[in-house]
Structures are given as structure tokens and as C-alpha cells.
Length: 77
Image (cartoon, rainbow, N blue to C red; front, side):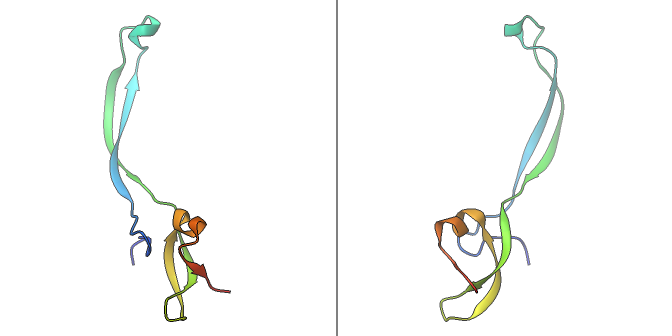
């Protein structure tokens, strides 16, 4: 089971990281040089909690913090 929010289907996204060195031209340097690029994952703030579904059953599901804070799901007691 992947860590995807059951309410808004938010998931981790693949992006990139750029490593730079040098001083910026505006500060009197020769300019910033790119020394490396690598792939990285932007992880979501997803928690596994017990929720009450539409039929009143208690199930365990992944919910993001944004949906939890907005009250889009009801936590089980």
C-alpha cells in the first residue's frame, strides 16, 4: 500500500536538486556555477490513522495533514 492520501490523493512527487558554488555576480563574484544535479523525492506529510468511513466502519488509512486539519475525515475514538 503506497502512502497516498485517501481524501485528496496527494502523493510524493519527483523533483530535482541543484548544487551550486561560487559568489553571485551582484556581490562581486564571477557568478554561480552548477556543480551537480540529482533527482530527489518531495515527500508528503501523510499519516496512517484510524478513521470512520461513510458506512460507520473503522478502517486504517493514510490521510495527509492538510485534510486532517481541515476536518475532511473523522478520526476513530
